[in-house]
Image (cartoon, rainbow, N blue to C red; front, side):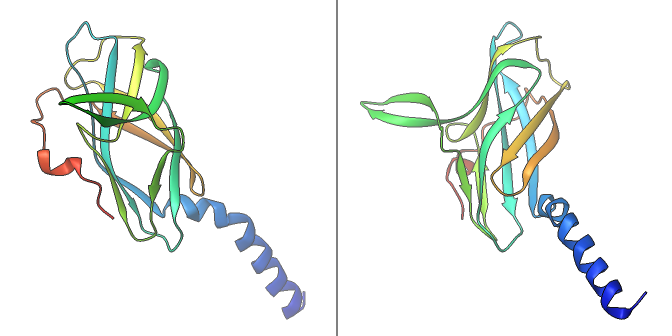
Length: 157
């Protein structure tokens, strides 16, 4: 085999494996899920998304077998002290080299129509869907004891 053939084979192999490397550009930290009570029909998950890559990305979807419906949500101030929770259809931007926080009182994963009760110490399987990085599977612990971190409700870039 000639040097040119070997070089072409290496380039072809690297181009086919590039999508696998994209996943490693997204890192999820400090993930936890919670419910308001054992009888709750909905729960939420929170975490930090770090984009270690050189390209902006966007979290565009989420799935979980623990809920009939799983969506990306945020809270919007409607005025007069009223906060409304709403679906964020466009997802969350995660800039290159940046971070996007999902925190109580802000952006979060909403799990509606829970298929089973969630108790402290349980684990929830979630698949995050990114525009560029594709699907990333997570196992998120249920933490019903964690106090709310008021400083984490701001988006960091």
